[in-house]
Image (cartoon, rainbow, N blue to C red; front, side):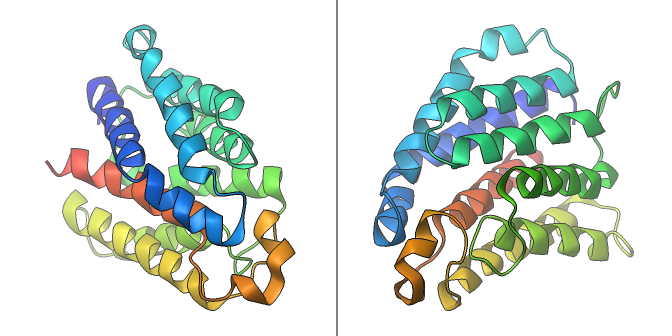
Length: 208
């Protein structure tokens, strides 16, 4: 993946978030403020406004600009969390002229570390980590035997989407959703859902 492909991934993320804006807000309405889709859509719309300037940036710069924009333009807790995730991921590819499938575990790990640093969350608390952590583990496992992008990305998506589904079965103990306690059981975490959407966007572009 070079700069042009990464920019296409960002565009695909924006399109998919926009398409799922109401779905994500509906999920959030059940256990939160009901604005996750609205906030994510607004944040990625602001990222797209910077697309012309990002065309002159390297891979790390593209991720950093995306992260900084999301951090300041997405409302609620999601902005700083996703913003930090993208900015930490940018450090992994600093100086690189190409992202390979072998870089994926380190990118996911950096994003997860950034989210944990910012949000103080761990696995099993009904957050975006419950989609991202299984995705990273699935990628690491399949890379032991596979080097082709298709099975690796497909494993990543499945793990992320299964992780998002898993959040329906657990009680929220972190963030706004923790306020509703047991009532959060039965509902998918909107952050886990949006994380799965973002990861699927990567595969859609790379495997197109």
